[in-house]
Length: 507
Ligand code: SAH
Image (cartoon, rainbow, N blue to C red):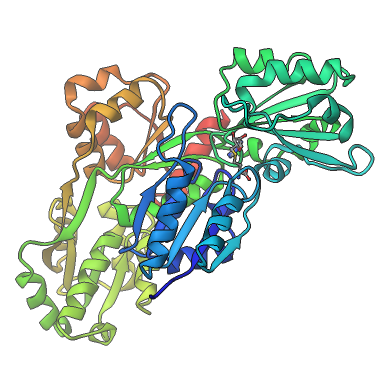
């Protein structure tokens, strides 16, 4: 029999960034991944595209799979010769039952590896500014579970003993029993004014931290409707939060930002928002596909020698053009004598990936400025200019260039199609204020977003939702279709848009 290995992996808490390199390597190897509820789904993006992903999570209200069944599943898949990854939140051995799974595998003689993860109590130091230990304040710490299983066989935590056991007490799973736990600790002699905190969704942009004293923390948690996953810390290091906490002070901390771009372009924008503490939510409203008819572009490519200039108006234009170049058995050398114009730094950067340097990079997508910038390099009279662009791009750039005496071949290189999205769900989120910012990176995005939701519903969007447009043309389209734009980037790039959003919230 061809037995394979099982990796029992800790994913860390909250953000996918908490994963170790070892964990990422093992995940990329797995044929099958069994994952828990507390694992951020974005981590699964590290899996091979053909890997099978199985949710085996337990939630506080519903046990979707019993531990014995998970063990059996691990054994069966490994027996079948599959490389199995068992992915858990935090560390797999800290209240994670990873030890039980490993024991079951050992019994079945299946090789396994355990990959540690950052446990939540540790992440709390970094992300909430509440370390487990701190010189002069806390020299010992205890991790305890506050979960009292309904079945009486489960061992009980001796809270009275823990009240004196350590300087810092980190309690996992204790949200529901906090009242009782606090009472036990206080009656065992722990001062009721001992600093305490409860941290929900630690290490994610949705992190929420509430502080108080041991005597009042249960009430505070109840009044603020704290929900799992949340960790309670009791001890003097809670007071360090004021100094150590950097995460909750990020300029976009906790903002939920809708990314409406094409899936392939969403990642770079999402990353920039996440870096500033925001939670990017990727729901593409459009999709970029090659032009229906590639013959016109192919003909232009066969004739590239004739062209003095190629003007790229977007990253998509670059990709579509280079794609056809490749399909025609050519490469960057075909552009040997042609000057290149890229509108905006992002487009220029994309050309640079193909080792192509641009001769002209007007920063703004304003036809007059583009034409002027090119004209400064050489008079455009009599020049042949190729404009590979979207089928729905504005035509006035070509007009402007022609007015200067150039010959312009205006060729549709790609199409922008509306992507379907769940309008009901999106509307519900927009109404409840579950989204703070909607980013619009193009006129098409604005149009498809509004059309997808339905014009009649646009008025019901919460006032707290801000629409952010990449530039004046997108903003104008957005307003025309009924989206109230509050934020407009002055530099028309992803980074420019992020800066504009930061500025908006700084006010
Ligand atoms: N193995 C995990 C713990 C699993 S038990 C670890 O090492 O962190 C589940 C409990 O962990 C939750 O009830 C909560 O107390 C805590 N927890 C897990 N992820 C958390 C998060 N992102 N924020 C706060 N608490 C979390």
